[in-house]
Length: 163
Image 1 (cartoon, rainbow, N blue to C red):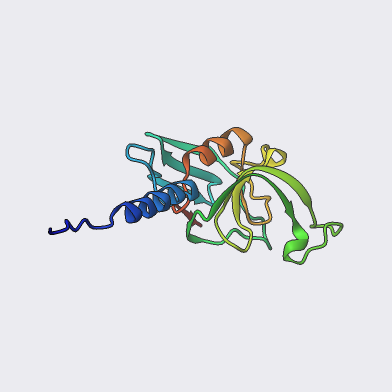
Image 2: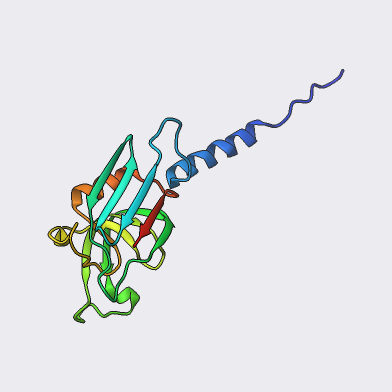
């Protein structure tokens, strides 16, 4: 009697399936037909944040880093998304009770650098958005615009910041 040899693919398929699910959850894979980030450009001098995603392009008023706290220029990959985040100036050496110190609750935070640069909702700076740079380096948007960006961006998408 000759035994039929059957390759052990069931275990490999299970491992591949689990890895695909994890990559989807972590934002490294997009399901077929899902919205892909077309582009995001923050312009420090025009105080705008232009995003092409979900089949549309939006130009949003923004506020970026004020003198002494300039927003870094370049192209950055989205590293993570955090729905609610407490931002604290002591994490980069400025005590929260110093004149430039702060500890604020933010929403719709999209991390661009491990050094603390985010795109996030900043309702306290809405009057300056589109006109003046008043942040400590982050890209400030209205809550509505930050929510739309957060919902349409994926980890690994890029944001380009120009002067």
